[in-house]
Image (tube, rainbow, N blue to C red; front, side, top):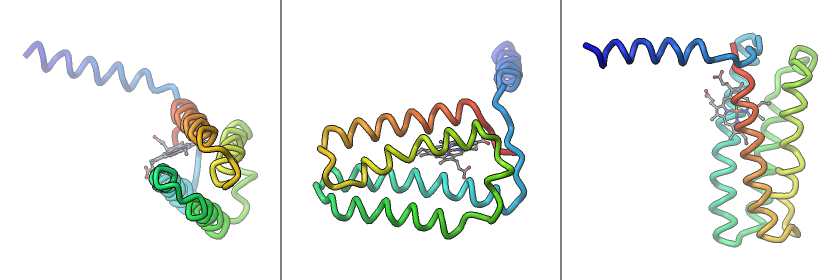
Length: 131
Ligand code: HEC
């Protein structure tokens, strides 16, 4: 009984604590943004495996594939509607993706860029929600 009460209280607190800024998107835009998010997680997973295998050429094409797919599937006119802070955070991922995909980047630096990239993922997830 007390445990149940605690759970109810805790979930209420968790909801009250969600102060993330909501980004308003239509269905098509939401489908694109969330789909691209899942693609990035998959690409980052593959990138780590390819780095372990030392296959830097395949790593480069894996990330190129992610980037071309993003460009080809992005709904038109989305840029204007998205808050500048969200766009800026999305753009700050780019140098990391570029360094990771460049076969000339030393492996230890690629690893550091992967961590820094994931810090951007996490910072954005703490700040924004999709509505
Ligand atoms: C510019 C902001 C931003 C960045 C950068 C970002 N995300 Fe997201 N991501 C979001 C938002 C907003 C959501 C929706 C969360 C919500 O509404 O609760 C989301 C959702 C997701 C989801 C869930 C998708 C689904 O189908 O519900 C995954 C997986 C994800 N992100 C992975 C990543 C990864 C991996 C990175 C970094 C490589 C990343 N994201 C970077 C903003 C961002």
